[in-house]
Image (spheres, rainbow, N blue to C red):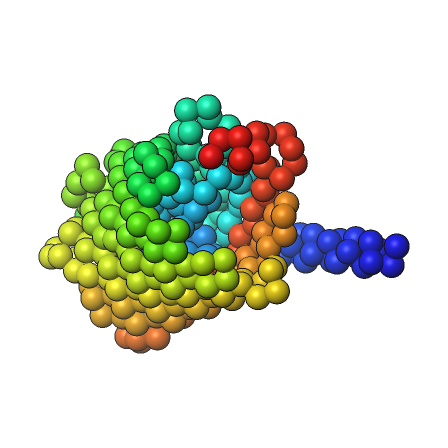
Length: 333
């Protein structure tokens, strides 16, 4: 009885903490104009969960759930689950805030087809460039075997900004028209993952493969190599960006994740960005239960000084398959 009371108190405390965190990070706030270049806060238009960011972005080989939806659609089919999730990002120096959510299901379809849908709303430098965009993602994946997974995804971007760069003021020439969408475009992603064994994974992923030709939707191709078991995952990724910097540049990422006491996940990562000539370190922690998991992460770009920013990330997922409302994973895999 005492144990049940303690467990109930622990869950109440966790939900109260999550509610307080959401109240703190979701309250819009105005701030001075950011002194950082706009491309630093835009971060290539990538949508990151706390797990992705904490591992330095190295999640193309061993991602699943919402991480797979945003970084490698093939991996949605690699793990039997039905997850609903929410995420938030705060960039203090870049004056950016992002909020969104999504759902990934790989057990309901009788054809073993996995699907995902996600959306985020983003606001950057409200008292400066005032860039606002909405990113919509949807994807499908199929497990051809327990070793080979293929996924494709579509993405639609709506983006507008008032064009005030802080130097020559707002004008059509300096970046756009106030309250007009300067980007309204569709593109698609594709990914494959090969698992020669359950502990080893290789992946290849392309993003914005329709080649929109703009830094708002940069075309990139990359991949990852990872090793993982029940308690430890280590992965390295390499990504080529063909659009953002006017020439092909590379981003290299490495990350690790350690599960402690069956419930606590410790993560850390590093990213080198050739285009921005920047180095970033990241770390995060997750709490995992049968019915949900909650995550936080922080990333710090160390150099150069004009790109030195901190990113705070928060995430929560509800495991719908744990409720009994869906088929059990054993029924579909």
